[in-house]
Length: 144
Length: 144
DNA sequence: AACTATTATTTGCATTTACAAATAAATACC
DNA sequence: GGTATTTATTTGTAAATGCAAATAATAGTT
Image 1 (cartoon, chains in turn red, purple, orange, green):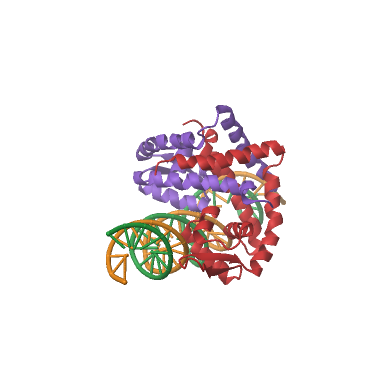
Image 2 (spheres, protein in one colour):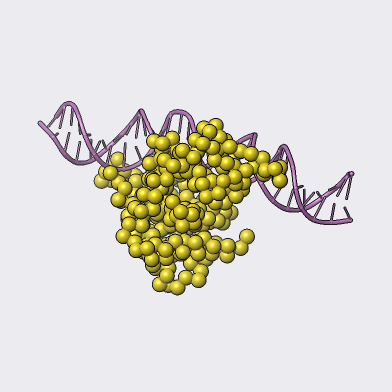
C-alpha cells in the first residue's frame, strides 16, 4: 500500500469525519446532533419509516437507533406507531417539534453542501456523487 | 434540499460507513479494529509521531486516541516515548507485534481499495481521490 | 393447527467515545 | 527571573455505540 493520502478509504473517512464534526458542532446550539439530523432528514424524505429502513438510510446501527429514537420521542421530535399491517414493525413519524427543528437545520445543511463543493463545477460535483454511489454499490462485492 | 441521495455529506457518510463496518468485521478475527489499523497505518507512513499529529491524520479525537494508545501499548503494538526536544510531547512508535499485525492487515486493506474501486478506470479513481482531497481542503472555509 | 424458521425491534452489558477540566511543559512578556 | 499564555497530553465523567441475547410477531411446513 502506498501513501495514506492515495488510499481511498482513508480519504473518504477523513473528508466525512471533518464534515461530520463541524456539522455536529454547528447544530449543537439548536439542541440537535448529527445523528438526530440524519433521522430527521430521512423522515423528511419519507415519513413513517421502519426502524430497519431508517437504520439502512442513516447508517446508524439498529440498536443504537432504538435508543436515539427513544430520546427523540421524549423530546417530541418523532412518534412511534405500530404498523397496522405488520405488528412486528414500528413506523416512525415526524412530530411538530421535529418539523420545526428540521426547518432550522436545513439552511445549515445546504450551506455545508455549498462549502464542501466550493470551486466544483456542476459537472464535477455530479461526477463525484455518481462515483460515491458507485463505490457504495461496489461494496456488495465483498463475500459474506 | 433535494433528495438525500443527491446530498453530498450523505453520500460520503454512507460510503464511508459501509467500508468502515465491513473492514472492521474483517480485521476483528485478527484481534484488531478499524481504529487500531488507522493508528498502525499512520505509523507505517511515518514512525514516531505525536499524539496530536496522529489525531489529525487518523481523525480520532485526542482524548479517545490516548485511551486507544493505552490499550495498544498494553497489547505490545506500540510504545510511547517522551520527545527529547519537547518534554510535553509523546512520540509514538510501532513495536514488533505492531509491525506483524500491520503486515497481516495490509492485504485486507489493499483488497478494500480494489473492491471499492472495481470498474473504475485509473483515471476515474484519480479524479475521485483528487475531489476528496479538495473537498477536505474546502472545509477550511468554515473555520472561524 | 402445531412447529419451525424468519423478520423486526428492543434490551443487557461492556466498550468506545467525546466534551470539559486538569496536568505539565514550553514560550512570551515585562 | 517571575508571571502569564500557549501548546501537548491525560483524566473525569456521562453519553453513545455495538455485539449478542431476548422478545415478539409473521411466514412457511407438514
